[in-house]
Length: 310
Image (spheres, rainbow, N blue to C red):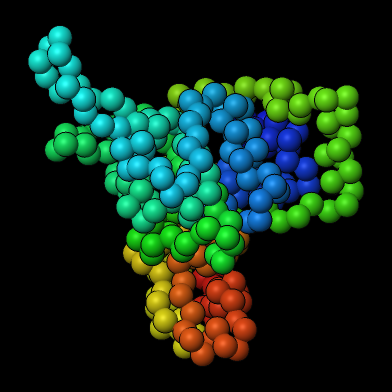
């Protein structure tokens, strides 16, 4: 199975040049069964990466370009009256896919954004009092432009907390950008060369294997201590939720699995700590004035909390 994950990474690299670490982070989030928030400026490959993952993993793919006029029913579905049966018939919404891309989510109204909450947390939607299960596996890739960009608004805290990780693509290096241009010579589309490596059923098996990766008691205490430190740090107005603690554990398991181990080490926890925690932390006004970032605080916490010797 570990050989399979390496092949998936290789296929995604065909369309995403020079962002190996970002690809690994995204795959780690998928294997951990989480949802992924990609925050960056337009045009750096956010949507392309999501599409590449869906293609190489054989996932049913759906996308919604969020705008202020997208309705909650467009996402969750709606009921209409069927004259033939004289009953209300449910029409599934656009979220009923294995990989759902919420493109520019922070352009939608808060009411539409909230339509994703139940789906992301419980893998189901409720319409007119009836609950409908989403397909498995189910992963949301959401993209957003940085706060302050024209026509955008901040995502609510309740939704931010449901994303297991937040990652950023960043601009490519000059050599990688040149490789990107060369791969598109004569009108070629690199996405056409992305091969299917596994099926959605295989991905479910991978996720089950990740859940069986061992985490000893000392590491569980270390994870709890890291989360606890975020709640008592002088530069943070609000720290990590218990959901974040669970996410940190799941991501640590998935990262260990990608390293071909069936047990978690402190370095696994430290590697995924930033992507899991930074988007959940809220700085105090004083820390913001001082120019601090949540990433800086996360690094400080990692240096402060004693690392178990396991």
